[in-house]
Image (cartoon, rainbow over all chains, first blue to last red; front, side, top):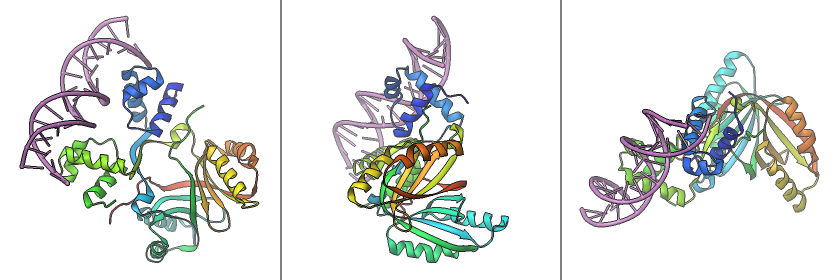
Length: 154
Length: 154
DNA sequence: GGTGAAATTGACAAGAC
DNA sequence: GTCTTGTCAATTTCACC
């Protein structure tokens, strides 16, 4: 699907704030309300916009302890990999999980309330998943940047 | 701020889809439309809901190459750290940047179109920031899980 | 805290350019 | 592909429990 500059600008605006009215958007883009409406519907239909979500402030709900867990599997047979990925995806503490290249097989972003909760998570949840070889965890000291907005500008 | 179960459920719902109408939410929560409205406004005022955003599908805009860059600084004086963080935060390819414990000082999540674009990013942008000691990059092979929704349930 | 009805405003559809 | 008009459904306010 080909995006023109209006589509790109529209996507940037919606990634910053999706609760803006079409009228506000139409002013910013110098377009009519209907044109904005049609373009948004098109972007949704084509799957460019996957969903609209509310972002919750971690610190306000006492979940400001963030850990990054690097994980090596013992073996890499199809079975092991599929099983591991399925189990990990189920854990609510795991917000992100990536299969990656390099020294470790997986990188996880884990959010809990504090170190004690992290210990619980490791002992009772993560390491009870079979096939895990070794892990390496590092903890967030400070969040320098965190955005969900991907630049779509040319 | 104290959250009751209705607030928690509301937050869960809004983190999944913030474009639901208050009527839909009121049905799911067995509450009146106005009550839902007032609770949402309260959550926004208190800063629990930090923003509403549209999520864009990486693959649809040709930005499916994800890299994780671990970075060590040469020195850790206040000046160096502040300068580095400021420069990194400016880079549009960097969606996330965390100051972390462990072998490296920072962990970056970088999104570009392909390996060539990543090379460009490293050579022309990242490594031109002063005070960087060593870096270690690993690449995403597969995204197993990626959610923005933090569990707020008790 | 909560509701339900009234006022306001935005979303959406139809037709013309 | 965009604009104008008209309708309907949403948000928001208010009076009251």
